[in-house]
Image (cartoon, rainbow, N blue to C red; front, top):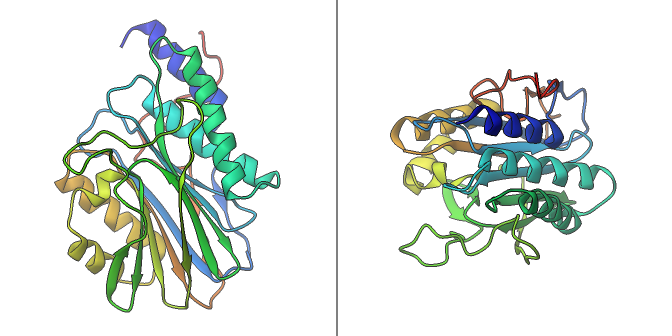
Length: 267
């Protein structure tokens, strides 16, 4: 990568914003949440995940492979969605804002770029999911795993996406899950669901009730056997208060360039 391109990437990452390390403090929730990401065999992690610290709202995105600045686009999409939600928007409004932000940045690039985006908001006992692309949601219940969203591909034998953010107006697909105690929801990029079969995903989800640990195990195992970045959010429904979950820069130390400064861009 040229020095100029590297400076542009750092600038756009700064504009996209980052999450400092956060720890939930007594959030009144019956959801136990964990997030994890691993770069896998790739040189750069183009996945990103984030959540609201004010309510049960989650975002997972994957920059489109082969397009420039995919890592920046996923970061912009997630951060814009969370900010819109925290400012009073619902999940559909947050998606629209995220797509608009990604499209505005894409317009500025010499070659257009985009990302998948999956958002999930807990509305009472229902998890409302909106998605564009092949980032997917799964529900584990009573030992069975079911895909809540489809593969998001234009054709079953193609990796081309049916939808994405960053290319102008797009209507997301929607799904709703009525949650019950004991449910486990997995929100993940294609690096996860394409790397291992649903039987193994089911085993990993039922391996324990510590959502951060299970999320970490899923990200690491899929990264070790697959050929892509692997990112997931695990949302477990129980009757306890949410455990403390810390998250640095939205993803943690497995993200390349997590320590890259986002100020002094043109030193």
